[in-house]
Length: 320
Image (cartoon, rainbow, N blue to C red; front, side, top):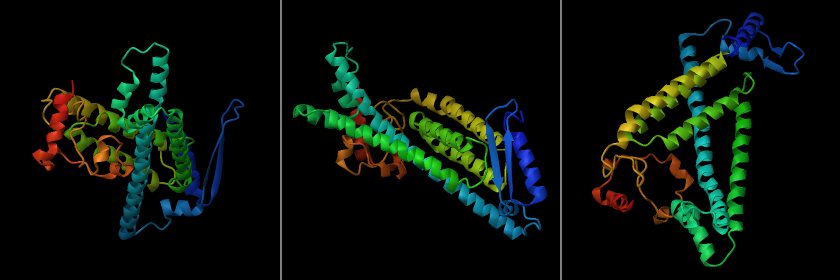
């Protein structure tokens, strides 16, 4: 189990660092003539900060814990926000791939009727409205598709670049190879779960807070020690979050599917979530809401007047 979770590396590194209390460099070469070499480095200052030789006073200990906790919150906020930002851009931009497929399929006479340009225009209005305007004007659609794909490619490159930069800015210490990538991948899973499954009021109230708490705990533990058990801590965090995901689906989301579909607190195809934002611009009925709205806190339907929620009820009756 220690070898599976990189536990032996942590034991050796901490033993050397806290015994010698100097800067150090260590390499591990896999047996059997393998070319894989993993290395770690640390400084005397990092050893002293993690565990001072003379100890800390109670006020110094409290101050350090508070600073590490603040750094953990900021780190999780940045990773989660940028991951959510990229996923939102990717969802909006990747929808453009379906239009060429539908047009080619329709031209080849193999369209089943479920994936037609007209259906896609209604399903993805933030792209469909532009497609419809260009088709009516007899203009080519390829420049529109190319623009969306280039934008999506640049956003993907920017996201990967941020992941690489954060490895040196936020995780300014030695860690197991690929650990930061696993953390970013896990954050992507959390954001995708939040996008697809967090729909009822109960899940929206519980899951983000608990997932945030698990990620903050993970980073608090990592930042508090010189070389902690990274893989074990991440595996524990993943296991707890997986349990929370399953619990929310079984106890909150599934019962919500069987509730009154005309109740504004019941997720339906007309209003997939039971939380709402004020429509600050009439263009949001066709265009995608601006990216800054991902930081606007949603509210339950009780926060709005009956007049404000009336068009939601009208959309519910119009859905076949």
